Length: 67
Image (cartoon, rainbow, N blue to C red; front, side, top):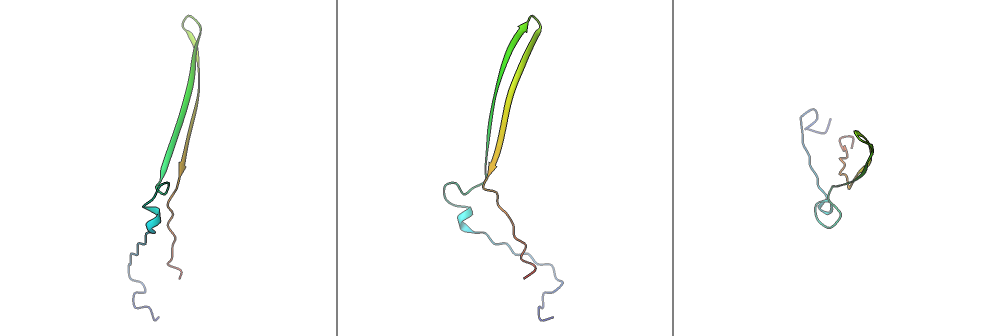
């Protein structure tokens, strides 16, 4: 009961400066794809492909309301 803001909507945003500046600290996504196509006979072919996507440096939010 000592918290005067109890029950009131509040917004607190904290950013760690290291997540915004510097090499390798920002969110990134890489994509790689390759494929091979071959004609087996007239009007019939085959196509095989490989696709890969990966992400890095996700930002997370920690709920500190329980403090």
